[in-house]
Image (tube, rainbow, N blue to C red; front, side, top):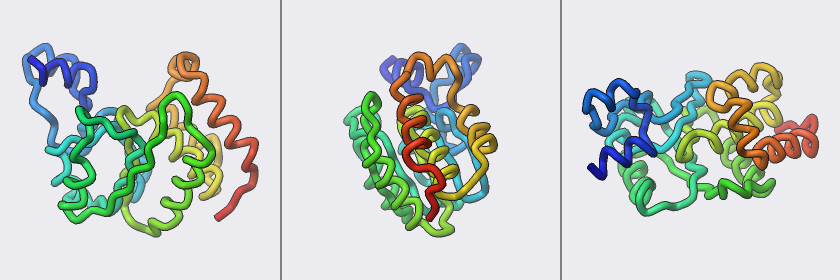
Length: 184
């Protein structure tokens, strides 16, 4: 029952029909992570990566994982050890959901700059922090046209979610206005 409630509230991409059918197994494939989104062959975003998905990281070619979630003993307590044990580089930048900062963003930009061409997964609990930070990185550091990057952002977010979480719209707008034309 606890596993069912965990998957219901923090599920990794389980469909309503799968839950209704009683299939509450924890997903193994990386693509089954909550709100998984492949931006390119070398850049992926998702919600929480479960221990059962860690072996799939290397099989999928992921060489670097950036976790933007805060430490949580029920969701990601062993994540760093599991990921690094699989031979994948790992970095945690704990971004507070209700208070993302420009310092967090700068640290993220530095990490992404240092990754080189490595296949990278950026994740958090539900892929909202990850997709927002990745959107800003692509626009401000990589020079991806804003409209193109926004399509990937909105594959995860919605206008309703921005209305419910105005701190994130403000954070994104401030980053875009404070760092115009920023280049690597």
